[in-house]
Image: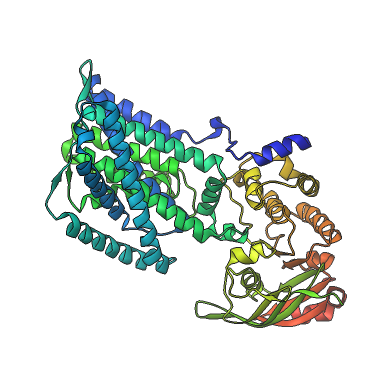
Length: 343
Length: 239
C-alpha cells in the first residue's frame, strides 16, 4: 500500500467487507421459508398474494422497529413508550389529511402523492419533536436503569395517549387512502394491493438509506461503534449524549412515519394504535440482534411472512408461529440473527 | 524538575458501595513514562478510569496541566488531550481496522506521515487495514487499540494492561513500540501487572495496594531492589 492509497482509503468511509463473506444464512432462511410455503400453499397466485401481504406487514414493523433497535442498541434504553410516537404520527396524519381532503380525493396521482408526502413529513417531524421532549423530560433521568426505563416510558406513553384523546376524542376515526393508491393490480390470478406495494417500496428504500448511512457516513460509523462500545466512543472524544438525543429524535420520527403507514393499512384510528405493533417490534429487534438494522429488516420480514403463511395454512397457529420462530432463532443465535452488542 | 502534566490529590472513588480508591495521590511528569503496578484488585484500573472520567471520584482533585478535570465528561477529558486504551482494548469488532482508525482521527482526516509512522510501529495495522477488527488476534487488537490512541497527538496516553493475554513475542514488539513512543517524548501512564515489562519501560513507578499509593519514585530504585519488590508486590524481578 503506498502513501497515495493510504490517503485515499483513509478519507473515504465505507464498508469494505467482501459481500461473499457476509452472513447470508438468515436471508437464506427467509427464502427457504417462502419456498416451503409455496409447496404447502400450492397455488402460486395465492402464495404471491400472501407473500406480498407479509412483506408489506414486515416493512411496517421494520419502519417502527428500526428506530427502536438503534435506541435500544446504542443507548441501552428500553423505550416501552415508543408506541406513543406511532400514535402521534398516525393522528398527525389524520389531522393533515383532514386539511388536505381536496388533494387526497382528487383523481390525480401527482396530487395524491404530494398529499402523502406532506402527511409523512408532518407526522415524522411531529413525532421526532415529541421524541426530543420525551428524551429531555423522561428518558434522560433514567439512563442505565432498565426497570425505571420500563416504568417511566410506559407511563409516558399512557400520558401521551390520554393527551391525544383529549385533542382528537376517543371515538374511532376512519382514514382513507388517497384515491390513486386504492385498489389493486391483478396479475393473472394474483391480486396485489397498490398500497401494499407502496409500503414495500417505502420500507425497502428506508432500509437501503439507513444501511448506506450506517456504512458510508461518519455519523453512521459512530452509531455502529457506539452500539458495540458506547464508553469507548466517549473516550475517543465524542459527545455521545448529543448522538443519543439525535438518534432518539430520528427513532421517534421513524415511529411517526410507521404510524402513517400503519393507519392507512388499518383504515381506522384509535389512541391505542401504537401499542398494537410494539410486541412485534420488540420481538423483531431481539430476533434481529440489538442495534442491527439488517437484523431488524430481515427478522421483520421473516416474522411477518411466516405469520401470513401459517395464518392461511393453520389459522389457529398464526400467533403461536411468531413465538416459536423467536424461540428457535434465540436458541440458534442467542444474541440474534446479526449480533452487534454483547447483550 | 519537569512540571507534572497530571496531578492526583487525595482521590477517593466508590463503585456502588465499595470504596475502591482511598486517597490516591501522585503526579505524572511531562514527557515521562510512569507505570502503576500493584496486585489484582488494588485499584489500578479504577485509577485510570477515574482520570478519564468513566468513573467519577467522590472527592479529591485530578488536574491536567493545572486545570481541574475531575467531574468533567469523558469526551471533554479526551478532547483536553488525554488518550485512553482500556483493559478490554475497546476495539469495535464490527468495524474494519481502517474504520476504527477513522473514528480515532476526530478531525476527519489522517496525517499521512503519522499514519506511516504508526504502520512502521505496528505493521499488522497496515497489513489488515480493510479487515474487520473482530477478526484480529489478541496481540493485533492491542496494537490497533494503541495505534488508535496515538493517531492524533495527545498530551497524555493512558494504557491499561497492554500485555494481558498477549503472546511473549508480541510483548517484545510492544516494548519496541513503547520505546519508540518514549523517544518521541509521549507522556505515558501505564497500568501493568507484568513487572518485567513495566521495569523495561518505566521512568517512574507508582505502587498501589488496597486503593492507596504505598510507594512512588524512580523505577530504577524499585527494579534494582528485590527487597522493595517483595515488600510492595510480593515478588522479586530476579527470582
